[in-house]
Length: 316
Image (cartoon, rainbow, N blue to C red; front, side):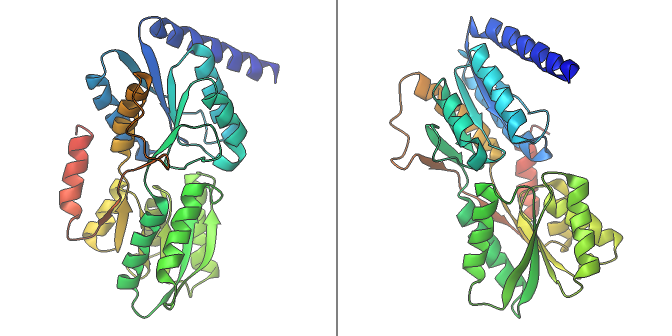
């Protein structure tokens, strides 16, 4: 235990020294996601683009060592101690992190993204309306299952606002139809567990004919589990985000469609917004403090065009 604490202390000192040296010349702004995932690569590209337009700032992207609230809080505390001027964060669990986020927001500029924490001292939220995105997935379901269906939703953190709002948005849209969500399975952002959840459903609930991927890696894990079970194409699959496996499934018709966010814009617009705020301009922030970046529905008809655009954004 002492060794672990010593390692953490050394890491914190190293981070403080590195960022402190940069802060002596330029203000440092940091994007902190909720965990390591390919989903965040687009946001990294957005931060990189913003850096090219903000020469007076140093922009960074810092992943927590694991997708745990305590680990993320420690990272943000270390960043604050090192003197950063602003943080944009996708909180692992906004409800349990409200006090920690308020502590950070009282010491430096704080924006939230992906999943909001409106009761904290964050200045504003930039990201999707998860409820509206859920409505869009609900519309995909109504088109794919006109005669109804039994769906299971798979998600990393069901208590997070982004997950809850997406699922509520789907439920609102399918209300009055014969489509129902019969279960929600959580995996704590553990991808092997996410796949096992799908495998368990196939064994225990053969009447389920619809699977919903709520987080970016959930559709890919659904896809792999169904493929290995010989059930690919026999169960309606839809959900969120633009993992390459998801887009491939949409193209081949084994995924009914997906609703994509624009994390590139979260990184790009979020960093530009923090710089404007620090330069004294808050006039662009809406009265409700929500800067909404629209979501898009991707189907077989527009998936090639979207995939090409995504590669361009990521510099591929």
